[in-house]
Length: 421
Image 1 (cartoon, rainbow, N blue to C red):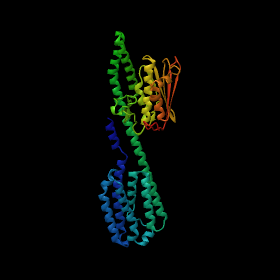
Image 2: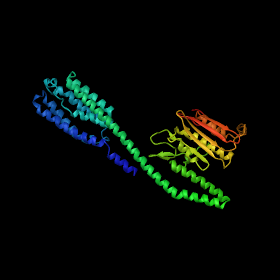
Image 3: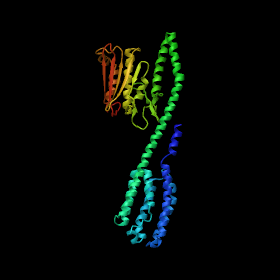
Image 4: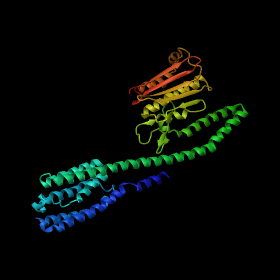
């Protein structure tokens, strides 16, 4: 559906009627210029020069009609050659026409055909290209007259303003078309995601809920299985409702330091793929997509409404540090402990807080663990944040849980393994 709508947008393109109008304009103005010459034929000083030029102009106009039928074939080289034909006609006018007619303000040999060449620049490249082409034509007209007359300045200014205006309109229209195409892609992706969410709700989530109820009723090992099914149901429901549905991990992206690589990247229209990179924003990925898979029945995840974009290496290292903090919660606070993840998107930094309701860490325990060679907090958390140019603060009160605050600068770029940013 999205592809069909994008093709429809292309067919509705504002450029297509403009190219068609330009094609007709070139033919009509060529005929007009030839008729002007035919009516004033006897007044030309060197008639053979004018006849030769108009023969070239007619052949060039008719032969290049396919070139101005669309942007694809209207190349820079063609535009340059087309403008050369127009400039040559302007500069040859004093050679072919009589001096009295030139001084009296007679039109140049290509006449208004020249404007078609300038408009081709405007439709192809926008207002900047139009300004360049019209400026070249202005210089040629002033050179042909010998001195800037009132009529010459009037015509030059008219072509200059009209071509720039058309070029600007074309640029605005192209931007609007891109926005419309993007909106249609998002709509198509949203409809597909809603369809998948309905299918998941009608099948997987109901099965998990049934397993949870039956396991709790049977007790024993079945109760543990039911508890795990309930956690997976909550996690899956959270991911489906937020649109951050994680896909399978690519083994090639696995990080040996944390043993796991989590993350999704957004497909066109808001659907994310592994890596978390958002379409249209190369080099940045959404941290929320990397942290969302942690959400579950015992892990609450609070995120901003807008994407939290970071450098890919920094986002993955920060996500790995969060994983290490949650591993510590499961290992030391027990399977019944609850944890909360809070993401704060500040102008200069990103702050992720991981808090639990476990028994806390006794005073001096971290120093003892580091002395015994257990470097989970020192390396997996603080070491990662230090390499990113950030910081990791751990606050723990016995009996009141533990809080880990991770801060990463907004524009950090890390070189893994050397501790430098």
